[in-house]
Image (tube, rainbow, N blue to C red; front, side):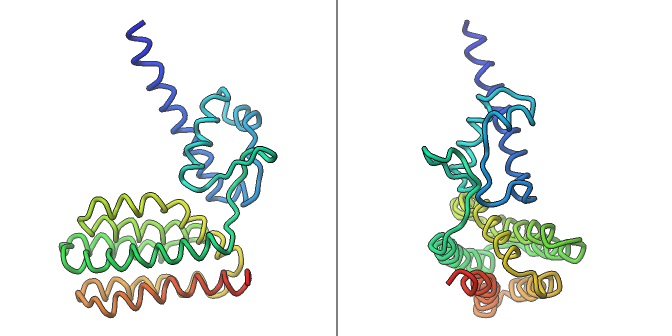
Length: 220
């Protein structure tokens, strides 16, 4: 009885993690678009698991902000409202201001090199969805370079919602997206490498502002 109590829940949590990963990947690839219903029975059949891990996975994705539940609709992929977009933009701004200051003050040359490698991967992005993934990985590298654990945890808490934000952005317009994003990020790296806080803060703000304007122009 003691062994069963120690092993079974751990296995169940591991399976829920795997299910959450697969559903999350499907949302990010837009196999499940914003507003799509996520039915436990259909997911359990598609993933060949029982409904328990699916239910737990959906709760996990709800905590990440990727899924919303309502008694009359069940679970659906989050559709970002204008308020969601504004809140994510302002929160990113607050976190990035501290992140830039921390990177410039505390990051090693190796940390900056890791950020640069993340920017270089953008050159090889084959489509807009891949570019969004590269953009998120770039910011992962920035927050890792801050040497500020709680700041990194704050980024991790909104990371998936920012990914959804950027997917929503390319859903509205891809005009110039693949061509200008790598250039933007090379400029960000150059400012960080030069330890130029003012330039870096302005460039990060401009990067956010462009995505925000694409979204607000079509939601206002």
